[in-house]
Amino acid sequence: MYDEFNMIAAVQKFCRGVVCVIKLTKFNSEAQKKGEFVLNAEIIETVEETPDTVITLVNGKKLIVDEAMDVVVQRVMKYRRALRQF
Image (tube, rainbow, N blue to C red; front, side, top):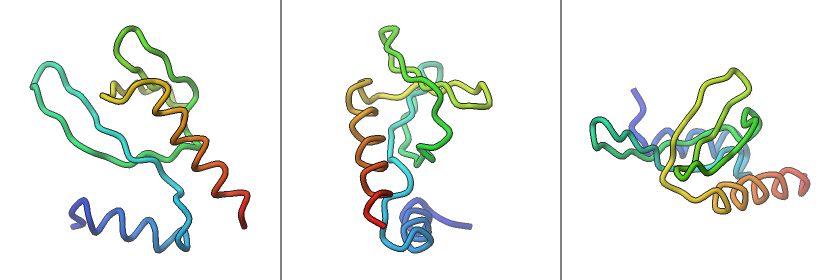
């Protein structure tokens, strides 16, 4: 089983050093637990602030994250720029 560090290292190795995912912090208001996770930027359909930042994936699943909408957009843009380098 991968811990968080090994999971990120494995993803980076798979992507040959290119950042192919974005790192976010999930917020679960019911349990008051926060946790970092990585998300494939290709499966993001929309990002909105309501006032929490809600990411809707192409499969309809919704994720609430701590990061502001602008931060999520910047990370997705950084990911897309990295793809164009190769």
